[in-house]
Amino acid sequence: MPKRLTPDEYAAGVLSGNRVLLSRAITLVESTLPSDQVLAHAVMEQVLPHVGKSVRVGITGVPGVGKSTFIEAFGNYLLEQHGKKLAVLAIDPTSQRTGGSILGDKTRMETLSIHQNAYIRPSPAGKTLGGVARSTRESILLCEAAGFDVIFVETVGVGQSETAVHEMVDFFLLLMLAGAGDELQGIKKGIMEMADAIAITKADGPNLTPATSAQAEYQSALHLFPLGASKWSPKVTVCSAYEKSGLGDIWDSVTEYVQLTQQNGYFHQRRQEQNLHWLRHSIRQQLEERFYQHPAVQAQWETVAGQVTQGQKSPFAAAAELFGLLS
Ligand code: GDP
Image 1: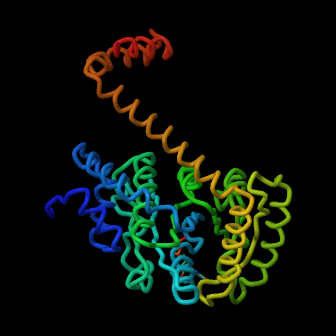
Image 2 (image 1 turned 180 degrees about the vertical axis):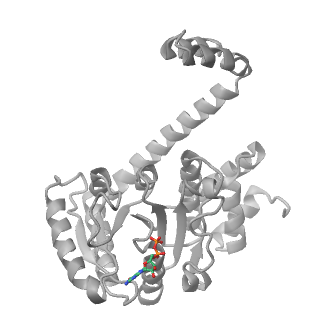
Image 3 (image 1 turned 120 degrees about the vertical axis):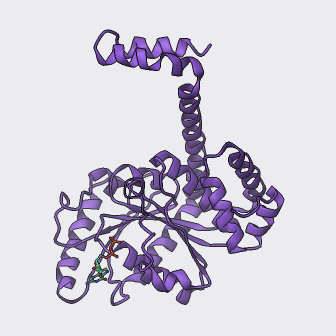
C-alpha cells in the first residue's frame, strides 16, 4: 500500500490531471476507514472550487442491451470528433455479490481504456448501493477537478441504482432494444420518466427496421408524459455501436438539452437540488450508522429484535425504546 499523502498533495495531483493520484484519491473516497474518510473530506474540500465544469451523463439499460459496446463507440466518438476528455464511472450494486464489477472484465471498452483522454473506473465492490452511490458522486467531482469534461455514469438496469444515478447526473440516457417487450427489459414506467433520451441500440442489419418502429413507438409513449420542470421533451433515437451510427444524434440531444436548461436556469437549479439531496442522504446514512454502532443499542438489539419477531412488541414501540437508549 503506497504511503499516504497530505490533502495538499492529493489535491494538487488531481488538479494537475495526474491519473495515478486521481485513482488514489478515488480509492480514498471509497474507503470506509475513518482515518481515510477524514483525509478524503480534506481533499474534497480543496478540489470543490474546481468542480462542476462537465456534462454528467447517466447511461442505463438491462444487461445485454449493448451498454459497454455503446460506451466504447460513443466515448471514442466524443474523443475523436469533439476532442472531449471522458471519464467513465459505474454503479453496480450487484458486484458485491459476484465479487466482480461490471467494468472489471478487461475485454470491455478495450480501445477506450487505453486512450490518453479517457479514464475508466470500475464500480467499487463490496458495498451497499448507498455506499457505492456516495463514492461515485464524489468520484464525479474528482474527475471534474482532474479536467474531464464529459462524465458517464453507467448502471445496470435493476431498479434502485437508476434512481441514485439520476440524482447525480445532468442527462439520463436509457438504452433499449427493439423487439423485446418492456416487461422483458425490466423497464418500469418510472425509469422511462427519468429518461432525457432513449436510444434504441443495435439498429443495424435486420435489426434496423424493428429499431425504427420501436423509435416511433417510444416517441409517442413519451409524448404522453407531461413536460417536466426542465421543459425538455425527451428524444428517441436509434444507434448502432457496430456501425457507429446515430452517435452524433445522441450527442446533439445532450448538447441541446444542456443549452436549453442552462438558458432557462434548470441546469444550475437541479445541480443545487442534487447537492441538497446528497446532504440529506449522508445525514440519513450517518444517523443510521451511529444508531447501530451505539453500545446501548448493540447491547439491547438481540432482545428487542427477538420480541418484535415473535410479535411480543410492536416495531414502532421497539424503535422508540431503542431510540430512548441514545439519550
Ligand atoms: P451490456 O451487457 O449491456 O454491457 O452489453 P454488451 O455491450 O456486452 O453487448 C451485448 C451483446 O450485444 C454483445 O454480444 C455485443 O456484441 C452485441 N452488440 C453490442 N452492440 C451492438 C450493435 O451495435 N449491433 C449489434 N448487432 N450487436 C451489438
